[in-house]
Image (cartoon, rainbow, N blue to C red; front, side, top):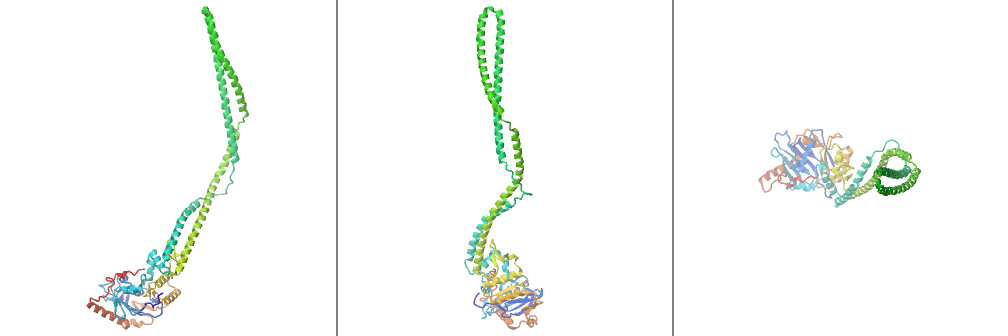
Amino acid sequence: MSTEQGIHIVGMEIRNMYRIRFARVKFIPGVGFVRVTGDNGEGKTSVIRAAMACFGGAGEVLPAALNDETDGEPGYAVMELSNGYTVRRDITEANPKGMLRVMGPDGGKHGQKKLNGWLGDHHDFDVLAFFGLKAPRQREILLGLGKDPDLASKLAAKRGEHDNLYEERTPFIAEQRRARAVPKPDGERPAQVDVSVEMEKLRELQAAKARRHEVGVELGGFREKLTANKARMTEITETELRLVAKTKENIKVLLDQIAVLNEAQGRDTSAYEEERDKLTTRRTELMTAGKDVKATFEAMADVSEDIDAATAHISEADVVNERIAPWKLWDTAAGDFDTATAKYDELTAKMKDIKAVETKLIAEAGIPVEGISFSENAEPLLNGRPLAVASGAERIRMSVAVAIAEDPELRVCLIDEANDLGLKAMEELDSQATEHDFQIIGCRLGIEGPGEIIVNDGLAWSKGDEEAVADEGAPVGALAMEHEVAKAAEDAMEEEEETPLYDDHEQDPEHDELEF
């Protein structure tokens, strides 16, 4: 906080602005939280808006600022400051945004630029305007309140580490979801049937059956060969008989050729006899070999029934084991889930460590807003929740804390709706404002009793000073003198073109630079 004494409002006078017909107020020194009380529709908010019109630039002058019951009479708002300056805005039907005048104690004339210098870079009299900013801007302001100028870059570096871990963790989240989607089978888990012995026996039986089949095929081959051998021998015998019969017939007819025919007969039959001898020998060999193969075949047992029995048992086991398959799938999914969860927890712990470092950096930076932190996407949080869901009282307390931390020269905060504050919260804000040399002006219904400023039917006065508005607006006292000085100055400046009054809306380009 600056060691110099801050600038406060010590008095105000308002005529024909918004709902206010006339207001004359003197502020009580040492009151940090100034309550503006009155029933709904009496003009409490108009007091705040009139102050905003004086301090906030032409952009803060709302449409229809001129009281519609004035019959064209001009309106004005005058703020008397503790440093001897007077801020005045005059509005007319012809100039609804009005003319701003800032007059120094020495009679010097100034414009909005002077007020901007007192406000600083970010300060806004409407403290709740902070909540209308986008999250990145809110974050920038909050980080700028810390005493560590490198806080933003340090947090950005940690945020980068956090984001990398988040990206690394994402696949494990997907794996958890995939594994969790595998349903647990209903009923009791069946015991798996081990058919490894039966499978080995079945393979042996199948091999024996195949070997027996091969021997049977071999035996059938011998039988086919024997059959062919017998058929050939029969063919040879029949051929010999035909030749003998034919020869006997020819003997009767051709006696003279007997010798020749007999010689031919001897030659032909000898060839058949030679082939028949070979076939006989081959037949003997085949029969001998066939007997050996037959003996081997007959010695090999038929295992078809054993194979059928083993196959049936294995099929029964398959039915049981098929019921186990979903359990195996569930076991695999459970294992995958545990693995993914372990990795997720590991990365989450690292992310929490980074978050702890961020929290420590923020704490060490001394950001003067209690309960402030930042979400994973760098959005400001208040007590661990987004600012958008903060209660009315939380918003007011945080906004005031931000305004105080910005340490402007003009230390005034305006709160249109202060009904969200309980009595204890008001006492705390009053102490906080007093401690930091701030002035908080807030509108309340006044259920707890009249405030420091009382508003009724378009009139406003300091508590205990109803006489100030007894004449419904006759300018008297010090503020009236300021009014007369300002009017005289206005007349003089109309005559002296080289000393123009400042119209902050038209001539001061800085009047719109009052946002947070």
